[in-house]
Image (tube, rainbow, N blue to C red):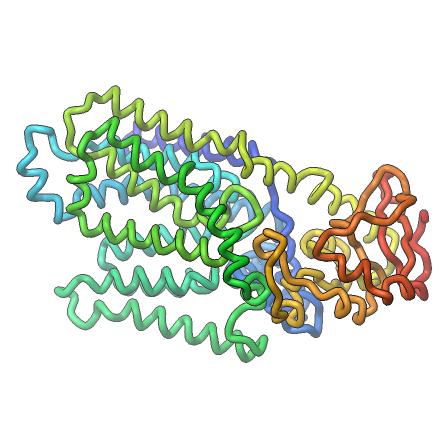
Length: 512
């Protein structure tokens, strides 16, 4: 690497790190994976509650990598953030070469020869891809979020590169890793492995990639069924089941993503390279990349999008969007260097805007506030200090609190509960992945404590009833709650109070 390029790469990665740190973000769901990893290390197997085999995770490879770091003595969130940021950094470093690879596609050779007067493809757009990854809020935010999103994005980029280079075996191996990282990874794995077969000179070997993906996916499915009794993860059943409800959340989710992170790549390259579309459309590789992007967007729309902020479900495909857009900036044209720089700068600014203003930033900020993860951490500390290890609780969400306390935990939303996940019900709340519930079933499990109202933490003991979330109404209105539980308040180490329901035959917690 030339010194100037090395300095540029270091500065871009520095921007990515500063951008990521600006979110102050870690998602509660990360501790679901960490709890599975800890139980695996402890000899209980890949379970959320020991003795109850439910696949309440959708990121097997990430759980195993988390377990490896935890077994070596790493704090789980720190280890997850190291893995996440390194994945995002490598992804950023790969993109300039991939943008140049698209620009030099053999399908464009004749067109470039005809337009030598325009100077051929301009290389600056390739380097811009690295900077635009650093400016991308979804990539930066999730690089430190604690989940598998950046690793899945890196594997997607690597598999895409293998497809572009017609490396069938590499595409197949990466396809298997994609399958193990996310359930939908099998679709991307098969897509890129099939793409890599478009090398007739390779002979029968070109089919090896598809065979590897098929064999790896089959082995994973057989293991899942033998371990959990299901062909699909429990999370799939918990988050889907009402296509109309999914579309009610998925369409707005996609509609808010496209203007912020796709439309600028359609419009602004025209400023730098007028007529870029006619030049680039001749690239079959570029067109195939667009099909992959479009298919992923359609998939996310159909499953209902996501509630976790900063377009988590679109983050893995965003690097390919950026690389394809950067290729457009390399189109032969008479535009001055200044216009190209202006287009790149404007794209970077537009990419940064959602990181600081708008709905997605508000979701991330709210998640870290005392209304969500902030209060859940306070509650977890108090519960762990005040209640015995054999305590059982029911709550939602089931990330940090079950991890910190180690209590046997019943999931009100069914992410880690087979019965609730398989319920058939209409999605009416407009909350992607947070629709299913069964209050009577939760109460039949007779947990020692019910943590309702999004885990209700207040400055003083609550005198009135705990506010009910819609997903909890069937608990609040049940005669079993009125006859079997009493509302109590637990004084937390921070001086606030956790308000919850205690089963009447349980000893009151300290402080209330």
